[in-house]
View 1 (tube, helix red, strand yellow):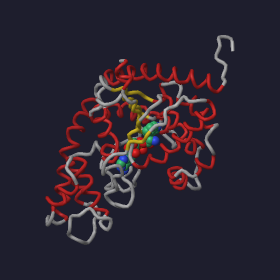
View 2 (cartoon, helix red, strand yellow; view 1 turned 30 degrees about the horizontal axis):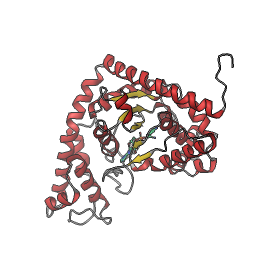
View 3 (cartoon, helix red, strand yellow; view 1 turned 180 degrees about the vertical axis):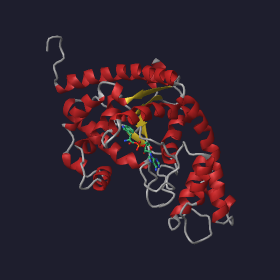
View 4 (cartoon, helix red, strand yellow; view 1 turned 45 degrees about the vertical axis):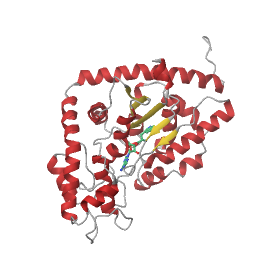
Length: 338
Ligand code: TYM
């Protein structure tokens, strides 16, 4: 374990909303799997972030457990990594409160995701949690003193805020936190919608053809790629004038492990119809084994619970140690009678 602790600490997670999609897998999960041998890894399920928009409690509980099954099906290994649920660890909310007192309100109001999400809910209820979302994310990362945070491109700004608040805390209270680095890798850091290749692939897209889920059947995946929006040309090339084709080439590169340049050569002269089928088939080969493992694991409730419990015990011990130091630094009394 001591040796383990000398490795860089990696922490990351995703929200347990229904449906983990291809963007989550290629932009995040696939990279998490490959980093497990190089780092001391903590992977969690951010159910506290999920309630920044309304959630049905029964669905949320189910999605949280299903998410553990997705993690394992994608290749996260509880023998090498710690897998836990955010709300089970006491410390995330406590640290978030302390960090919120150091975070400029203006910086939170300028966050792209806050502007997007609150804009979409214009005229409806917008909870303050949506604004404080990045502070909770900073707390997730700093509570474990993570060095590296593997995420997709959309989380970069949140990582910048985390670094700012860590530096501010260290500046005021003395050095305590590592300044974490985002780890944003490869062509799939921003997988785009299949129906609008200038917008990010997202689980909440109202167009059911836009997003490929890891739970999709082979036929559904084929249908979604066959109807992917491209352009009126014929040349299979990853250029900015061809965002649809570029996205498909990036996806093909992500699932096959081959370079975009190599794929452009292989697919030259193929025509868009054939090319879409080739991409669909490669994605099907990648997703099918994950889907099969996921379905089997969802039946293993006791096993999933045991993974969460082990992960929780380790995470709580680390969180307690950091929080005790934070309380000490900020001047919270923590003696027996205080
Ligand atoms: P979430 O659940 O939105 O997404 C999980 C991960 O998937 C990546 N991702 C994508 N990558 C490429 N293309 C896409 N279209 C795409 N869509 C999503 C995200 O970048 C992310 O890495 N706030 C986080 C969860 C979180 C977290 C943290 C992450 C909470 N605390 C602390 C890291 C560290 C989120 O909502 O991810």
